Amino acid sequence: MQIFSLFIMMVVLFAIIILSNAIRILREYERGVIFRLGRLIGVKGPGLILLIPLIDRMVKVSLRTVVLDVPPQDVITKDNVSIKVNAVVYFRVVQADKAIVDVENYLYATSQLSQTTLRSVLGQSELDDLLARREKINQQLQGIIDEHTASWGIKVSNVEVKQVDLPPEMQRAMAKQAEAERERRAKIVHAEGEMQASQKLTEAANIISSNPIALQLRFLQTLTEVAADKNSTILFPVPIDILAPFLEKAKQK
Image 1 (cartoon, rainbow, N blue to C red):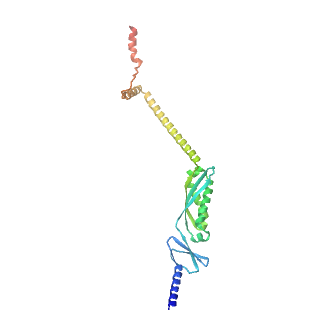
Image 2: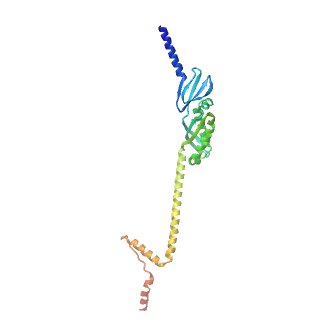
Image 3: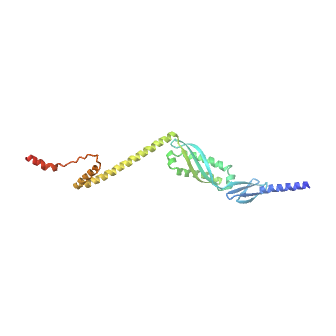
């Protein structure tokens, strides 16, 4: 009787093990690549998946977007500047069977391809283009990587160059260049202000010269403004024409 009970327990345990290997549940973002005796029979999921024990084998693949951090790469630009650049790649699996069958490790393969592409593209670009036209370089990187990973069932949605580390001497040179550029702009703005002021002064002089009384009124207004400061000494010029009658009388005597 004990032997029979032990046999029943072993059968139940074996059945539980078989069922646990035969029944799989996949989440909404997961797919199962099914191999039967080593041959690919298809992709299943999400939900409840039934497998034939000891015959079928399933490999789970996530369809969510993967954020791949590309480690810093030493790059020499087209204008012979040594820089260190890192980037981030956004991609997702769109064909789970190809991601498992056509490449051994799609995560590692995509990472290595991103690193080599980053060095290659930035090596053909000048430093000014890298700093000023980063969006164009991002699109170029995304197109090249996506083209190579398409055969692996992977879609690259975006590539972003995160940080560009420049040598200290190049940072100092760029700081001097930026300072010289700001000085140039300041001088241009100052010169434009002087030109506009001279134009307005010329217009004002033309208007005043057309009417002598306006010049006299302007002179009196200037004296009023100067007289506001009590510590100032005012020298008031007197036209010689006012003194002419007194001088003639003095000569007649």
